[in-house]
Length: 278
Image (cartoon, rainbow, N blue to C red; front, side, top):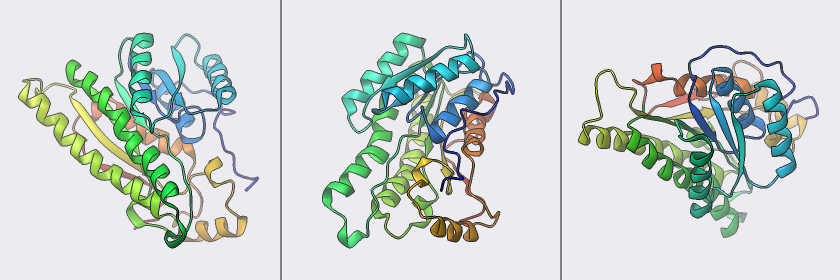
């Protein structure tokens, strides 16, 4: 597993465009792995970024220092919180609003695994993964959606997993949590459109509020570090394109969905998995 790069922070910064200029994005689990790649991708399109993290303050501060060096003056912050705690989620959202004045984009990326065969999985292992991955996504989306409804615009993007679509041995809790995000996505997408229509804010030339999900396949991040090389080789052999996904490939889809021009895409599941679930 040593050959896998777990962070995109050593890659050169590329200002790819201004699709998100003036926007503010809150990214949970944003200081490392897929989350860090998403933060950088959003920033490359002009967004200011607030990165959430759970407990590794040193890593978060390192991320912020490197991010500010690569995107000077763009407006970045880090916010500590436990997404499985609804009060923490509301506090973080309020912190971001006080710091940046608005939230245009929410990316629910934070997630954990506690793998074990279902018959041996403890109640605590089941509940913990569901609390972070699924409940945490709802706890973050609820206060942000309230803010977006008031403004009449916004983008919510969930980072689920191909495992939520296919299932996987030893990951009953993870698969269930990620599958639940698909139903949550479609429901919030319908509710957001319904509320805007009822308030007279759903107009032909409007940006609106959209809710979508990205489902990565096996991504080269630290979450796979504990996987033996032989197992990784087997995984690669099952992926039609023959390799693991890079975090930046997930991030590109996220920043596409976050753009104003993607206003006609909502309630959708975007697979980025090398053809694994064909």
